[in-house]
Length: 325
Image (cartoon, rainbow, N blue to C red; front, side, top):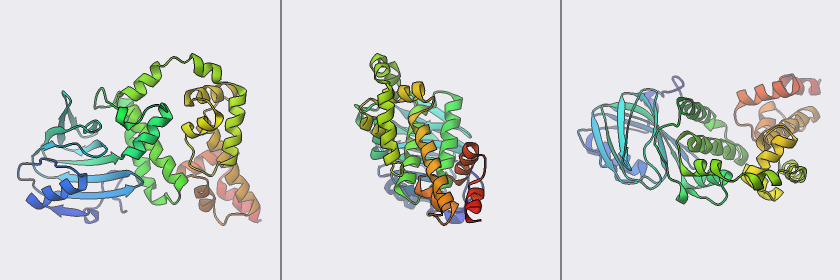
């Protein structure tokens, strides 16, 4: 996928370009719903990249438009690059301009609105992706339980975190060569969405009675989690999966690692994976740094190299070069 800059793609890369009824039909099919698009539409340009339950769209509509849409199968976050767009759903109306992010609607929720001609990134997350992230937060919840209190970021910083996380995801799409990398990337994006837009799952999890979790935050829970991680470091692991193997709740596992190791379970997993990458570079069992990184779920080469330098005080290529020497 070619890029002109961090936000926009070359027009020749779009999957569709058209006007009028043809554009209406295209977008209805693309979003799996009747969008109720009216007005003359103008020129519509649309491109989609999909990977493992996440669809990232770049959409431009060059004329004023209104819409009255049925629910879309998934959650769609809209990041405005140019122009202005307005959404109304569940008694809330939100206007977004360049640099803003807004949730088009909640789960299974119709929405209406209008735009004055705009360019946006639309990111749609599917039910399985949301379910996996929700189970990390509360194993007893699913996407069916998810409701949003508001449809704009809980704070400017949260909005920025969402957009940075999305950009990292987009830049790394082409490097998602195995299940571990893809699972890590999509889970990170789903967690960013849930912690950006205020909802009942995150809100209620924060209000839970924490007494039992603190009691379960024992050294034995850490040891069970460590054994599981060290035997499955190459697999796609979430906090929920590790906690289940350790026999405690995800929150208790977080407490246990913070109390006894001073880090989170996922930070510990990342360190184990870094150590295994270093071992493979030193023993000659891999042909390149990229091969070693991808095998252990490091899908962002720049971040991997920075973490490796911070952990071991040298670049991974230096480790490989020294081993070959």
